[in-house]
Amino acid sequence: MPVHLKAYLFLIVTTFGWAGNAVIAKFAVGHVGPFTLSGARWTIAFVLIMLISTPQVRRDWPVIRANLPLLLGFGAAGFAGFNAFLYSALQYTSAINCVVEQAGIPGVIFIANFLLFRMKVSWAQALGFSITLLGVMITATHGDLGSILSLDLNFGDGLMMVAVLLYAGYTVSLRWKPDIHWKSLMAASALGAMLASAPLALHEFSSPDFIMPDAIGWTAILYTGTIPSLVSQILYVRGVELIGSNRAGLFINAIPAFGTVMSALFLNEPLMTFHIIALCMVLSGIAIAEKGRK
Image (cartoon, rainbow, N blue to C red; front, side, top):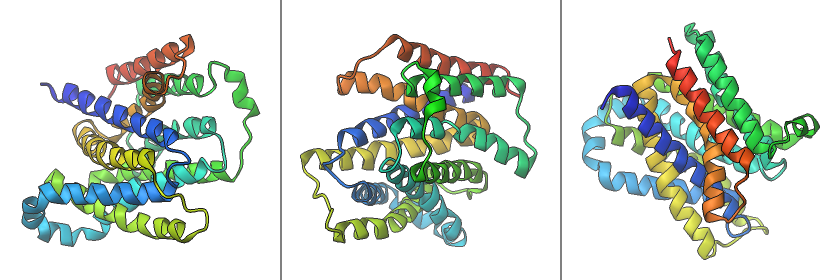
């Protein structure tokens, strides 16, 4: 399979996994606390990856030890940090605000790559990003783009912008990842995510508002600890490795569109015409950006 087609496959599977994360997290509201969910998911992810990666970790240990702060930082910022700020933002602001603001991640990646590495964006990439962003806005506003002007910004939106900066920074910084096996990379990153999410999970556990996970809560923990935390993260890193952060980051804007389809399938939410239009716009924007890439 050509490299670019392999990257597309990896990134599409990635975005479906992350879209499922949003759907299951929405379904689990009231069944498990946000920081409990985050802490438990990364604990499960770390245990699972260590079960299959011990030989690779032992072989790569000298390189891991030399780059341990960077590898732990990948997990702390890109894995645990992003999700902690996202889950926290949803406590204060609307899901629409979060979806629209998350759609800015590819744009932040473009800007960071230009400022740090003078990596220019082609006209097709800019046009493709604009089309995907418009598709996300159509999804978030249920086809009423005028409602964007009436969105109220609050503390939660500030938290979401921190989440956007964290994930964009994580994506750009992957160019500095050491030459180690992907299993070793994920093990070290998952460890960083688990360590970073533990204090918040312990604080939530000791609070009077702690929610003991029920069957739905544990289902959400098990799903998020496997598919989005391991499968999607592994494939995203591989996609960035194959085609670069500017191109791979654009696929993030497919998450709301795929999430809408999955919500219709699994949560019995209505699938409207504007959802289909938005999905086509997101995929068309990615195709245009790829067709006219430098």
